[in-house]
Amino acid sequence: MAEAAAPKKLTIFDLQAKVDRGEKIFQVTAVDYPTAQLVDRSGIDCILIGDSLGMTALGYSGTVPVTMDEMIHHAKAISRAAKRSLLVGDLPLGAYHASTADAINNAMRMLKEGGTDVVKLEGGEDFAPIAEAVVKSGVPVMAHIGLTPQLVSKLGGFKVQGKSAETGVQLLKDALAMEEAGCFAIVLEAIPDRVAQVITDKLTIPTIGIGAGPHCDGQNLVLHDMVGLFDRFTPKFVKRYANCWDVIGKALADFQEDVHKGQFPLAEHSFTMKEDEYQAFMQKVAKG
Image (cartoon, rainbow, N blue to C red; front, side, top):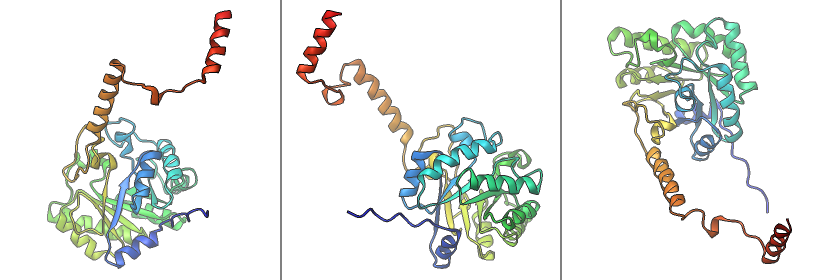
């Protein structure tokens, strides 16, 4: 029997084609091999290997401590699992902030070592020259503006961005600058829905919203948030589609109860020995 054909790997051009057809883009994070398998097999367009894994997988209080080596470690596992989705590797704080050379080198590392297809970097007008240099080096870039968690101290905390006329206009300038730099798509995080709508209307590249309302060309969520596997906080913009925390907690409690009551393991969970082998074994035990 012939093997099933491998799924077609999505590209940045497939994303643009979806938007041109009036379809939405789906992007979800993954942090390891099994979560990447689940996301990839579900038909999600893009797997974001986000530095949010600092919180969901590594236990940090935010994304700032995440290193390039940690991102590549997780990207390697995820790239082994994802056969269809476009893999987007986040460049963490410090990976592209000091120099253009650092940006290009780390973007190349994300592709060569991590196995991603593209990279994502946070920042607006100020970072457009960096993004342009990375694109010119041959690495596709997804931009990210609005609430940029890597620079949360500069923003004064995890706050909605672009709520005033002045800051809304700046976000539009940021988006246009990143498009001009050659970015193939842009994430809009935690900005008013009408600002996101204007930005989406003004750009030719796809916008992917996370807390940016319904008018973006696509939507992004962190897997651990949407399935209830992160208990520290749930952002306002998250819709929880499952509560895996409670499901897993109940499974662990049931396991302990079964072991305590002698209800696990039972015969169907155990390996047996043929009777003659068992008798021979016992004879050898008796002989010492």
